[in-house]
Length: 463
Ligand code: AMP
Image (tube, rainbow, N blue to C red; front, side, top):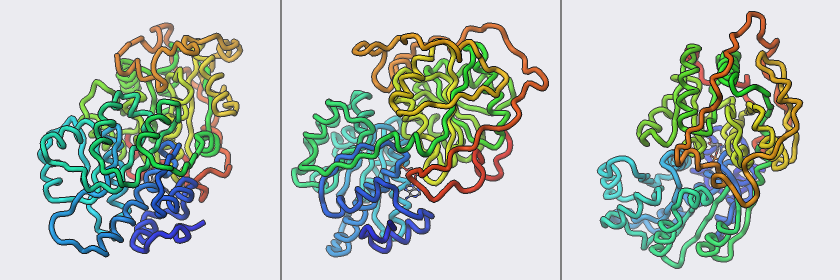
């Protein structure tokens, strides 16, 4: 299937070609024709599947063809509203729209909280076709009279499950109440529990459904492995992994904010340049860190789940689960950060004694066994041999919400490992090779990995 088979107009096809997309992803193949036909859509898909293009391209197309027909004079009225839970994701969506609309001339404004409103309000005053917004700032600016939603024809709620987790339900309902009845609505969520289905019922009208199972992305695109290691040796193992992959851009997940800061300190001791993003840092600081990471100024980014959710770092070659998540879906979200688009990614998970049950739960969810990598100096055979104990999370008695947000949100800062016996890196203790080659399976962006795995942009050598 080609993009040109989907009924996309030539200025957008030109932009797609310029971006180097060779063929549509499964969600694009399924969703674009439905949306161009004007249907509502309920999409189960996570980031990394190409979903942003799947919903922005048809909206852009419909707006630019009607702009073309109407050729109205005067200030542009907002025709599309896209709601995103985080500033990072909102910026990513607007960046994507800017790329796809480079030859159509549609105008987009992005607004989010945590920064002064002046730039955002003056952009709005100049008029725009598409508004990408986080819920709080949107309601704030509506209240101040800067935004009216009465001309909205296209409404997108992205990452709906995260939206609910972050407590945005009332804001979302208020926003829906301000939209015209007659509109096309799109609703995306990585998971579809009952609460999400109920919310989608309030928004959508006779929707078509598109499901891109997370298994497709995890199992087929990302090469995964488990490293058994004692808690006390996790820092040394992480330094070892980073040193073994000097050209990689690595995203490390920590369960807690405090843990993330400790990991960064430990990496600095090994002279590995690293920074952390988490909920204790301001939005601006988080964005700056993320931009520096994307530019290759440092190569190990340590993040908590909430801070990293939805971030799209192209060429991210390795995800490391320093702590395994106690909710299996979180694992899928995490490893979805790598192996994006035409890259093949790698995810490795450190597992200490108390975390074996989490591995079992994850393997059940993704319906596959994750291979064990024992060829490293900190392999803990004791943990490898131990049978998984029941973990803290019991059915119906979750310790956090389904994305394991509680530790990040409330800063329950359990140390990440007792400062036990420190293992020096013995000379000659290094494993022989680098990580295994990923399988060449058919991943959703089949077209193959370009060049060397783990490599990041050139000129990026210094750690
Ligand atoms: P998303 O799931 O929307 O976050 O997209 C993940 C990444 O895939 C983004 O960096 C997009 O630019 C890229 N992408 C989207 N569609 C395609 C495609 N058809 N071919 C290659 N890359 C794509």
